[in-house]
Image (cartoon, rainbow, N blue to C red; front, side):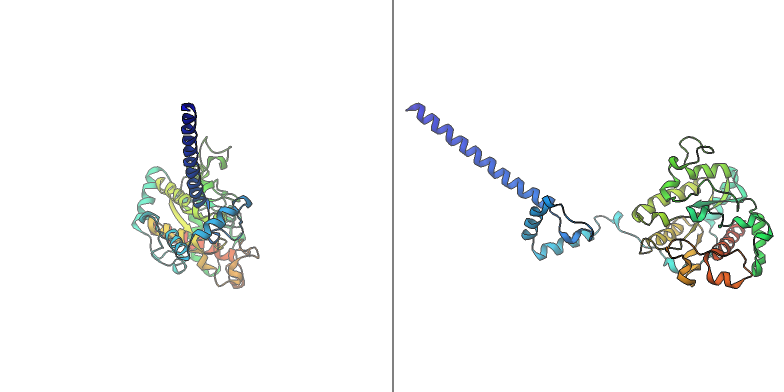
Length: 335
């Protein structure tokens, strides 16, 4: 009889333990469903939820009221801290002048410090992607007067002469497909001319020792614009640290769709107080805004500035002309 009572007590304890475990399992299951569930409205239109997660999502949607969904959307759209609040450029980037109107004291200080470090006052480097690496960009101005015609812009001959040798230089910091991150990555450096663990940008600045650098980036960053600013700032800071005046160029295209990369370029130029070349603004009145049908590459015409049709129909003559104007402005401003 005593053995029967002991057995009954043990059985009851087991049942209580099982009931407790079951309750805990149920509670844990609900919590997991709530964490894993994702409202369909928050997913990109091209993505679908995996089949195995369909049931938790349906359960979660039934548990949420319309008020809950509104609150969730507001929480997601509200910055969690002041540091994450996006900032807008002090000036609308579209309205910035093509050629900088003034040269800042900061720019002059960078230039003078670079001279003390051994930088050449009559040298500049090209920093960028395929549209900067190509011989179509400024190359002709080192090939003699038969390769170009300044036409009514004859006063630019002085800047052509001053930077002789830099126009035809194939920079070690330009390459097809380059992004802002590529310039800071030793993997992409020229192994024949660069040192171990030296980035393409550092290699170009060391070997050429320019006083100025035309930085034209952003087209290849359009697929990942949220990472552009961080890497772009590293490029600009590297130039400044080495006493090289960075001339920041906006890009012609808007492959990212909202102009955020050009807005970032303008904002960075204003924050670091360095020259801006608003190339985007220089070609907006051209057919297709100066772009080929792919929406990325520039339209071509010879560097004959005496021929109005070239400047009125194609973007390459305007790119080279305004690049010379910006170089002249910055060069005269620092001296």
